Image (tube, rainbow, N blue to C red):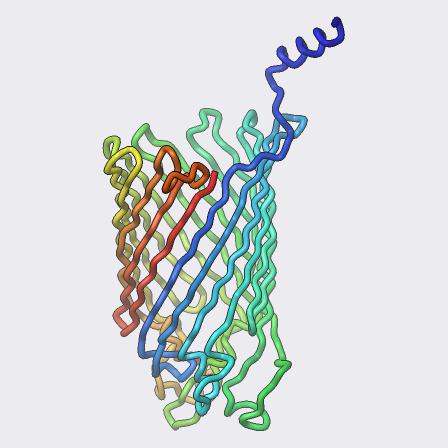
Length: 385
């Protein structure tokens, strides 16, 4: 009886006690459908169909536990699967009615381990990711650190990431040696990306929160795509050729303002510049409106504009004297609009009465560019708790 009493007293007096068993936090399932059309396919030298569809599904799960020092550990695991069909990729072989290039599947798993010390207001995280498809493989590692201010109203974060990629050199069929030869084992080349991300978030007052965001990105290796054609002014053709280095610098600002109890204004602006001569501006606004305690609607709009890289020219405009050349309209000057709305449902008893499905969200978006490309997307997001 004395032993039992002593143990019970010890457990009761320990204010720092935390269960160290692994606990399920939440899981997320996102499924989406994307469809686009356009008339400037890079595979055929900046002309031709850009018809493409993509079906994507991602699933992630978060577990947590406390250690002996009272720190909370989070374990996140996720996997995504995309399947796309592309009319332009099918034109790697211009004479084929249909080839293996018209469709592909990408699989991308990820793992993240985070350690949060609530008492000291800081956290660290480590991550690994991979992505594989027919002509592209990628492996990534990351590490991050975040520190809150003494009053817990501000937080600084920093993250380093490296992506080690391998590109299969799938050439246009007429540039193969001999021309038209089919290959089972393509040559490959490396593409490496190094990213430093920095952020500062601050609670200004009970209604306003802001964030400053910046990335420093350095890429080196094979940065072209081997099956993108470029037609020159004399009628000749080569594959796209771009510099083997690219430095990117995006800087962003985000602000959330709580306009009463039922409306939030979420604003965002980003400026981007890189060593290839591309400059861009992004501005967006999303306005979640809570119609009742369980249902909200979120209309959104995003405007984007960019200049062309120094090495872009349309079909049959490049000169053979050009050192670098591309007719990829994603690297041309254009502006775009993206607008739509999301519907979010969080019933007390769970979605459709299922107690473990805490949230259901559906979003639709319409995307248009002033160079003849347009797209529609729809997604469904379920949160399990």
